[in-house]
Image: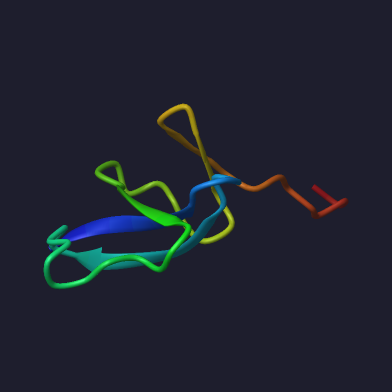
Length: 64
């Protein structure tokens, strides 16, 4: 099993992370989403996938 990001096709928003074997015959993402393998184990929900890279969400903590 590998780690995959469920990415909204239009926005690039990472909606979820799943362990999956990549077999589209046994499971398919919901309409409007693609699966992107996260081999570097860097992505998480809330990230954005742009130009082949996972971008972390902005820091919303004003104290940092």
